[in-house]
Length: 552
Image 1 (cartoon, rainbow, N blue to C red):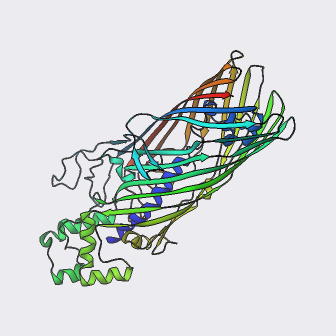
Image 2 (cartoon, rainbow, N blue to C red; image 1 turned 120 degrees about the vertical axis):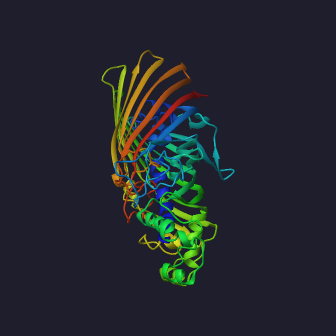
Image 3 (cartoon, rainbow, N blue to C red; image 1 turned 30 degrees about the horizontal axis):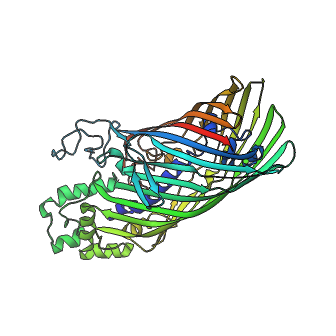
């Protein structure tokens, strides 16, 4: 039964894999207002100074000295629903408080009144680089700005130099106490903040330009979550605790300890629906460099082709972890470890015979942010109408597995290595099996007047996550992105852009189909806090943007 705590170590890998994937699947969002209004299909028509990200070759089109200030408001909604399918039970028990509306501890092991429960997020969480801590923002939209960018092209030069501050990745949320989704993250955040991006664009000739940018970024990830394990073995543990051990609860009987390995010693035993522990992990890297390369070919005013390569980025994050074990977990492990036969069994498995209230320490992780390639065209079928089409590839196959290194052994890791091939007493190997993706993006711009342009975009995003790895922590799988916007030329040196974009994703995870959420049976060793339950997820990210661009 103590082997169930192996899931604490395995879940560490799963949680970071899932949340990192979720944030990365939101790539490109909220970086530039004009790009946002055209569904980011701007590789052949890069948006001003933020060509730094979308295609550095586009910098060569800028003249003189320029400054962009961008303002962004983001509202995120994530909802998960849990329900019990017909015949739901874990080793005969069905009184799961997540889906059972019966009075708690009413003496019945079978639920008589099932319900569907809903998990929602209460607000946005961010991991701030200065305080190095997770901060919960007040409920409501996240407002950022002014976010600056600058460029200069000396008179007569073929070179344009630029830099910018932007957020290529920012995601995070927190839930209220008692929310049924807290077993998939109470507070989570993943940020990548590019604080400096020295870049250059070069005009090779009248039709061809090339460019490059280097980004210096701060990367951080933080997670706080509760753990439980609705597993057949823990169901069996509850039967032993409530039936066989009931007459001997809390007693230390030598004969009983020899025969039952000390399993009847705890005053509080284990069960499939009880909390096992809570975990708090935070890691960061202050200096994380990356680079982008771009090319832009514009043979005439009505057609252009562009391409950009975002090189894979190696990130080495360091941080700390804290695992606090529940009373039931501690009493069970310590009860087994205090009996002669139980201690021998644990020693054979290499498992500690004593579980402290908590384990704390340091850990680190090497992570490669996947390569990203995007190419596209723009063409103008009429003088006023422009259409953009981009093809987007992201090498999520790079995430075949994650590997975590700890500064020493701990109880959860010692157990996890028994069930995770490739792990050691101080490291955890977690396989992922993600898939690289291709998708198209479409943008349109119509010049109403010489000053006013209307824009729209659509991007159907593919999912890199296999069906058997879907989870409520990763609500962005296959998604649809819709956008509208406008651009207004205030005067010959000043432009204003407005945009609104919406990313929507829905998913259904039938009971037993995903071993990152609801696998059933005795072998669901990967973390499955909602084993046997039907899960549906719905995520929506709404963004409003304002950009002020001027030459001076």
